[in-house]
Length: 432
Image (cartoon, rainbow, N blue to C red):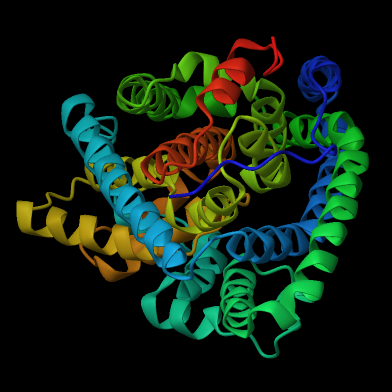
């Protein structure tokens, strides 16, 4: 059983989080207006969004490494690592599979692609060629090859999440096996962790600029008018994700003693940042801090949050089955129940390792369709224009799903301070 630990002084203060929330909200509004009224200028703002995401990605690998190593080192016994990991993956598998079924079911009920009658031969195959090529890494062979780093330090310099996870777990387990002689190293890493999280706090001050540039580019480049062509698909996806969050994750929260609406309010600043940048990765360090501040034990946060970014992608899974059936319906391709079962199985496998970055869902969809030949991969050209607008929803759903997973696994493991959780979700101090 894990005991929630006291939190370092580097956690964001409520007032600071409130200021960030308002600043990002204003930045998103201004960026959207710029994209609407001056599209060329808005599209030119892309470097601002890219620069901010790169700033955050610069520290993600160190954050994950330090969080996992110091978290595992804080466990009383090495067997607790496997126990927490087993519970986390059981949760991930259950709700990732449920998300796939939700997307499939909604596609059957709404039929968003029916009536378009698109001839596959008329589709622009070149438009999705690069995505189909990138999809190789999302295959199982590509995944197994990709997860093993070149050197023990290369994940930290290249910023690869999966490789960083592997190295961090191996390093932490090795340190636990060494025992007391490794204690000075762990203490040094704990001090380094404080410095890195303070650095994250400094970088987050640039969040409004990044959100402004990213949303201005999206609206300026693709135009709000692009939504009109495929408004049905976009609206269906957003509504499905909303139902999944409020009903499915809401029920999970209720069963575990917390309100999903209060959790969303608690994470509102980070969710706005995800909305503005279309990347849940941009708010990963902040989620680690917020979950620890909400009373989740550090070892649980250190394992669940980073692994969830690769293995608990509820929004991406909803998108994959919904989009795949949309393409099949639009191209008048009838899928048997056996083919749909194959689609589900392939989607479940190909979604693993798709980190929460912009475009990952589209690449994962390409990987899935390439193994289910009945649905033309070229059909992805139909949704290429609006995929950016759906990327925000995928990232938001993934982010909320990982926050819920962290609280649930912490509760299962006995590492949840309910007083701190209630105080955090109610917007007051734990002592209040």
